[in-house]
Image: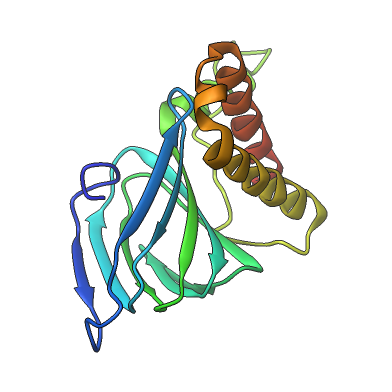
Length: 182
């Protein structure tokens, strides 16, 4: 997990009984979908993360997420967007399972519109720290990301054999993030 995201400290809170780290990852080019769970309450401290956005979509359970000077509880109704190069700390409940979209900053920025007057691409996107699934644009994108991850989990080899399909899925996820911009 540390190699995929960033080196971090992981502390199991309370009993180690039930601890079982499970991580599934599929890369669609530059963007990767990850599902991660630990089976025990854990505190995750990666410090300052790398040059990527991390969209946290809880599938079940809850987590307390701190990023720089923001802190929030997230669950299956609330997602969080962590910006690149920000100090992060999380506490996940023992039943927490998280779908995480890992997006390199440059991959997202390259898909942002270019200012027609200056010819310069837009600055790095700014997302609200948390987003509620009850907002239609957020709920639609969250559900589509979940359905895509489920489909890839079940039929990954068939999709991965089709580079054009993988590129289309990656673009769909990236352009869909635009619905969450502040």
